[in-house]
Image (cartoon, rainbow, N blue to C red; front, side, top):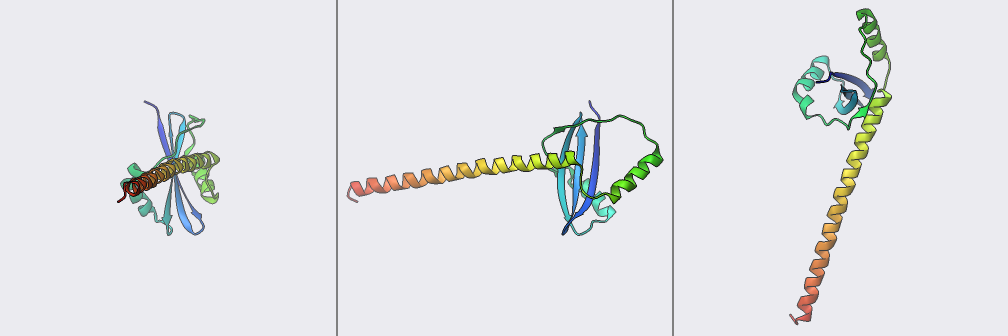
Length: 138
């Protein structure tokens, strides 16, 4: 069984606050995006994670390099402060979100195409039925 690590980045994307969940499992990165609306408090984010993490729709996995290093706690704290100052999300996360959007777009296209064909077939059958009724003199 591989190692799983996760990360949540919350940032302000005009006019809403957005959370990006990153999950690295067996060297593959998956991402889910959540719109919070108003600025979430720490306890609201924690509560959201506890209640809704299972229902998040993660993007398809993207291969990524994972570094296995033991880091100094002070260095980790400095990095966290630096990340808080930075805005936006990592490029791997952006790629994963883009991949997820493209996949959803393809699914919508297929579904709408099927609906369109079914409706055209139904209309054709209806027209054929009316023609038969007219031909029989009814």
